[in-house]
Amino acid sequence: MKPKVLVTREVFDDVLEYLSKHFEVISNQSDQPMDAETLASKLSDKQGAMITLSERIDATLLSRCPNLKAVCNIAVGYNNIDIEACNKAGVMATNTPGVLDDTTGDFTWTLILATTRRLTEAEAYLRAGQWDGWKLKQFLGLDVHHATLGIFGLGRIGQVVAHRATGFEMKVIYHDVRRAVSEIEEACRASFVSKEELLSQADIVTIHVPYSSATHHLIGKAELKQMKSTAILINASRGGVVDDVALIETLRSGTIAGAGLDVFENEPKFNPEFLGLKNVVLAPHIASSSKATRHKMAMLAAENLVAALTTGKPPNLLNPL
Ligand code: 8YV
Image: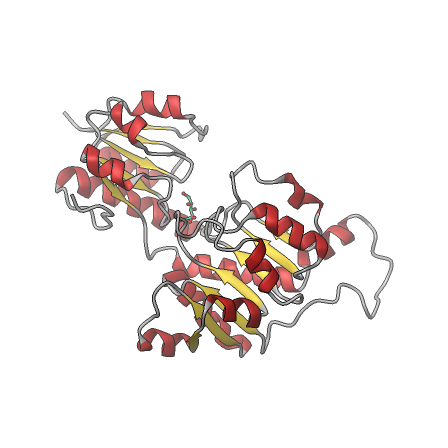
């Protein structure tokens, strides 16, 4: 008998076909988000699951899934999975590193350019029929070329963002919990600075750290105050790394020039106050969403699930047991 697995959200047909060669697959192709109770009942007799950031895997859920051996995230970030609880329950957890770095880096630049040049604000004005002619001072933006880019987190995605800055002839500074090796710093043309230096010197502050208790509200009221009044903040990492209430206050008072956000606290029920602000560009967590990359992410998660349940050695194991 083939092991039973649950695919919690809609995925590509060929990914399901691949999984079906190995497993009896129960999949949520209708893409209805599941609450904790539905997830627990659907997972209670399964050996494996392919999940997304919308599904929380914790001790309570695991206690109801005695046969579960592997949970495979279709995401590089895995703050939706309690790794310690997985360890205790003997459940392997995997993620999808590497395959989304370029696409997420590209989208970070989409946010940087849209925010500095006020693209969504200008488009809304045009769509509302308010454009009555060219004006010299219309939608004056900020220059990206030759500006200083400050990167929090020079990991895989942070490095991609730094590489893309070369074309804009920017100065690149970064801060991280650990300084990168000199080869990476040289390849990225990035100089290591303190958190305070980054905040006070950067024209564009962009965040590429994972979410954890250590990075919760890494950017809050005090940090936003240290930024230049002409600077912008970009977040395509995880909600919770930025204190959204503090950011809203800062954007409203014009203490910084703007923000470009792909992620929010309490997604998808983000703070509605953002909607009333013109100096913020908003996106619904789509930084990795190119056709090719989302397909690679889903296929990699499927490969992890097959390897986990057949060999016990998935390529992207987060918790060697
Ligand atoms: C995913 C992401 O689309 O990989 C991540 O960590 O944030 C995105 O690329 C999202 O998490 C879906 O699960």
